[in-house]
Length: 148
Image (cartoon, rainbow, N blue to C red; front, top):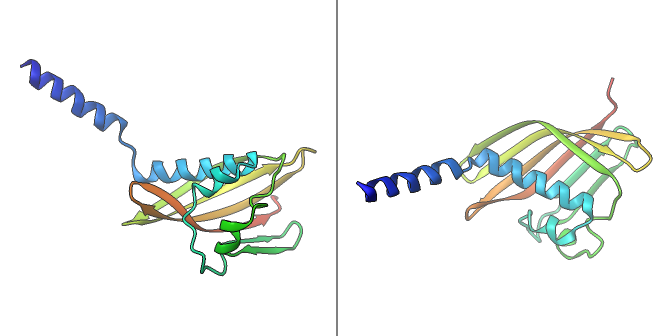
């Protein structure tokens, strides 16, 4: 009986500590953002699966300042200035996460607050791929907007 009880407790601990793919995707997205805003290059890169042949990994189309910016996978993997250092903070919210096999995406809203207090609002979609037991970002779109 003691052996059964020990196995039962072990099984329950595994179930309680198991995270869904959706939770793991959100954790990856949040960790990437925290590392990005801390200027932690290796932290950001550890959340990504880079494809050196990719032509457009990040697309930022901003209605606030009218620019479109993209990075190649090779550039992101090799550029010692990526990610750029910043003193801004962020808040991600309103997550919608979907998973299909080893691919998933996270759609969410984000607010960046600059050191002078100005805020930038955006909708973001991150495409992720499951690599082993971890989710890695493979592409991002970010559309800035001015709230009503």
